Image (cartoon, rainbow, N blue to C red; front, side, top):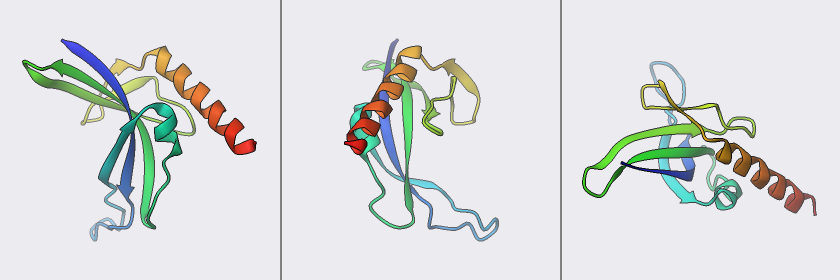
Amino acid sequence: MAVSYEWDAEIVDTAAIDPETNEPYNDVLDHLFGDIDYVLEQTPEDEGTRIDVVLVYNEGDDFDGLRDRAWAYVDDGKLPEWFEDAMGAKIRKVPQKYHNELRRALARKAAKEGA
């Protein structure tokens, strides 16, 4: 079974409000997949949206299709230790390679913005 990882900038709707809870639905409107530098460059285009940066874990192949998927959302410039499935269960550790990749990309972004 093939495993792949991909960076995603999710465009999230923060304007639509659930009338029962008075909280935003936080529906994902679109996905902007790319390398980490591209994903970190994304900014909300509209009021009422935000960008969530996430590393996506995919397991599957051309024969069986996608068998498993999990997400690790960047929070305060850091990846969590574990990927979580759609139910919020921790299912797989995030490889150190991606923690390092994010750290280096954030340093490049900070240097570029400071120049």
